[in-house]
View 1 (cartoon, one colour):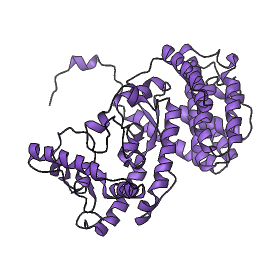
View 2 (view 1 turned 180 degrees about the horizontal axis):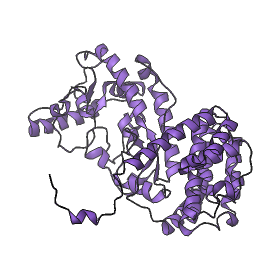
View 3 (view 1 turned 120 degrees about the horizontal axis):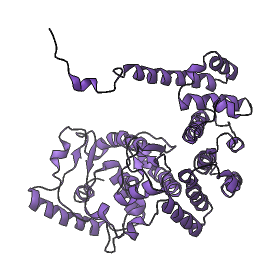
Length: 436
């Protein structure tokens, strides 16, 4: 059958369907994984031979960075010709510097004793001063947090380069602005809040974030892992570790811990009623009992809210099974109220025992792709971030999974064996204080 010529399509510059490019990308990813395994096994000479025989395989910044790291771990001095046979543009050098540290961090997760002083390669990759300093002030500092001697050494090493203008003169204005961000982080690590704030002001004056850029999530996770009834017994230590991660994220990102008070915002405690597991509510009950605090005033608050809910929806908020497909329909949403634990001056009366959702909001990810935060926190993430638009956040999914498994185990011990995942608002739990 004859087809009429479509002239408009002839004007489009499209040489192929794009499948070839997609296959090239897939092959490059597979090659990187294969090369990384060789590097991980310490077969440096074999990897060097692979690159020598097929230099065309070094076709992405990530593979190029792996090639460079393979030279570095063999203590081969890096030279400009290892980067490119002709003068490379600044954005290429910057991409290589970034990927070099990223590949090093991947390798470091498997080989904790591996150490490399990347500052010695600033002549060939100037922006290493950014990404290596970032690594030292974040990952390395966190790794050595139990050793004051190691932390002092890290701070001194970083400052020697942050304070040296010669290390920054070969970069454009955007990259050079990172000096202020890193200086602010250095001062936060040094407990010099005034200087940190001054450096952060300078950073915000010369750095404009790309609010449409893709987000890169860097996750911090808890180290403890319990099962069953052990979880309830060990919630204090779990919460303590989460608090330390929360503090670390505040330091890394420059988010001000007083943001809520500064903006006089209490939306989280007055306009939402997140579900809380049986496990978490039992811990709150035990906390009240251990501290000899009367729960009656908070129960009375909950009963008043239930009365309002009854008037609006014809029924009170209920304890529900979160595993049911229609669980959201069982508790109608839309009623705004103050959390029954929120005091007269907007101060949480159960703050040390607050549930996971309250600890996570603002600084956590549950899906590894997004951050659950209000605009005050998200804006600080954006305007304190590097050009890579990174987010250092708490990985709450691990704790949520652990709590979920424990919640299922203890449900039958408290008359809720007909539910796999009994959850409810704090109002629902408080108004049904029959769980002993």
